Image (cartoon, rainbow, N blue to C red; front, side, top):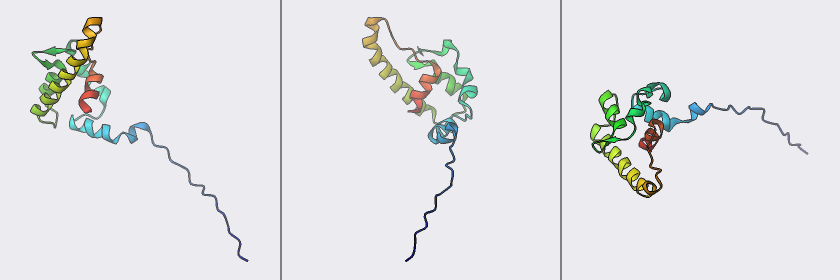
Length: 114
């Protein structure tokens, strides 16, 4: 009678670092010709860039002026307009409470990426 040999697999699971798992994030960063979110978007941290000017966010104006983005400007402006419309819709209710939303650069970019 043959006996079954049970062998325990001693293979170790190699755990990847978080930044190695964020493939989609890397793709979006590449569209903006960016390698490091914190360093390469440093220029957007200025609080003077928060908010809108002439119906366009100051962030998108600055991004377009840098002219490194692989996304066409008209597409970026369309995305920005959509963000503005949704933000205004949210703020309609919040204005009465005096708690309007003003996006920080990392929040704006997260919305833009989505």
